[in-house]
Image (cartoon, rainbow, N blue to C red; front, side, top):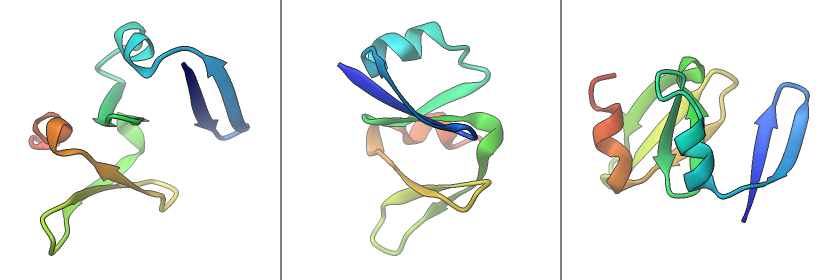
Length: 78
């Protein structure tokens, strides 16, 4: 029941579930890409499909996060 928020000012641990946080955040700004990951839409620079069929989102700072199969539809239009 803790969520780690990674921001430009550092990592912040908040007592919340990711599901509850997802309901509270603006879906025009935030998108859930994995059961354990949400990202700010403006920070996503690319969504790539790997040779093994898995998807990854590449963020503006070069961070690569896994995109879960359940959440791929949310990113298809990008």
